[in-house]
Length: 215
Image (cartoon, rainbow, N blue to C red):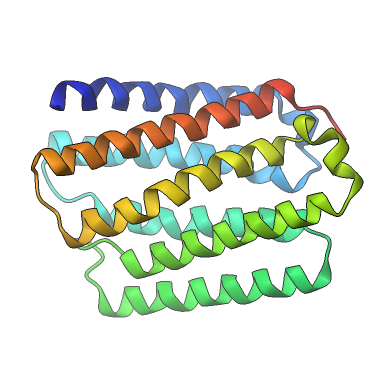
């Protein structure tokens, strides 16, 4: 089982770098869109993954503080992207409420949870839940607009598909891994599923960059 995990990890780490580079090359096509901060999210992800891996493998200490901080900026930026992308005023209000709820939950985790040794599972669940909700609102908004006719050329559509599939699949895994951490074959199976979901998500990002057109 471990022989499968490492190759998958190398694949998604490579995809992280490839997609980030392509995001910079294609940036002029979406620099004025809500996704203008997307390269920053991708860069932050690359730095977090490699720094977290270095701390885990070479220093041998917990890297949870890196990811706990990362998730705050990651979710906040993506929430902001969909807030800007959606035009319906009542949808925007829902998203703003979700963002505030995420921030309050994150503050609660900072005050009550050891940031160095425990994952901020509550704020992660809320952040991911709000993001899924944002994506659903975005789909509803698209279906009610003319954008649905050219949706395959819209970068945000492909990004949202990748994110939606990842978090629908990974959120239960995140909860199980946090509450029932155990280095057994079952844990490794969950890890394989997680890495596979990351690869699928980034392949959708890649498709988006390939098919996108400036609007």
